[in-house]
Image (cartoon, rainbow, N blue to C red; front, side, top):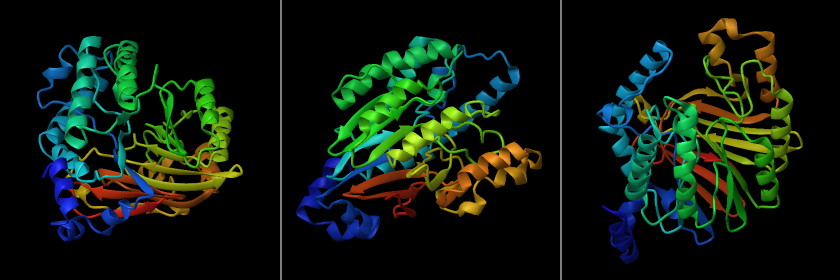
Length: 378
């Protein structure tokens, strides 16, 4: 059933009961007149089954890293030959009369291209696919992910991304956008889009201050703003690094986000993670989303960790040598303010529902017809 047919039948009421049976009461709830929704995809790593279509001529100075990337090409090809297509079809069914946008949380594409023209073609193919298959009539908004900026020469890939995406986002949102950091609004709510790979802190700070006073301040960023539970990449978050050399800078950013009671929408970790944190005189709620559906098991929502005590503990089980005083202190710094926390490897599609002061995210694992989990953000 395409989107036009969906609305046609809904308007006549002929299949109202069946739709409620299929999609559950959350669909009816999202259709309240005072609410709006946003359909969200996490990381997608769009790619072709034939690696030569986008990766011809790709090389990396480190053979072991190139070998790892080529394994990802195979993973992506398998996903996009089956599971990922079904996931996107399911996401399209989440669109209703009150849906205002479709978001994608970065790593739109796999990247790893040889030149700028190929990189732009890769981005254009992905944007056009998601736009047409999910909601052709709605703005499709994406944020820069590390893979989106990756190629034989990352600086070339990054420039290609900006040259393509700035005018594309301008067209999608109907306002001038000149770079990877920007702000837009929907009624009383503000949305701040941030490039995390090389964060321009003064520009990001300025955009966040411009959002002050909004009913809800949504921060769209590929990486989390909190360290996450992974032995290899726990340090790869906004203004984070292995040595925590930007500690004061990240704390100032955290204070700013808390002062705005920010709602952070992100990806990067290939997990579905919810974290509600109170501190620095305010609140930060983070929802991490993934649409990288690698295995059948990820079509079922199952929590691997839950509660503040379990935050950032799995990495110590995987690599006990990481349980250093510095790492324990870092995680405890954040753990102290955690009110709610859960993490799952499930992948799927998401629906953000804003109903006045209330904000929810409904998660649909894999291509599940029914909601797998509701997260209350506000």
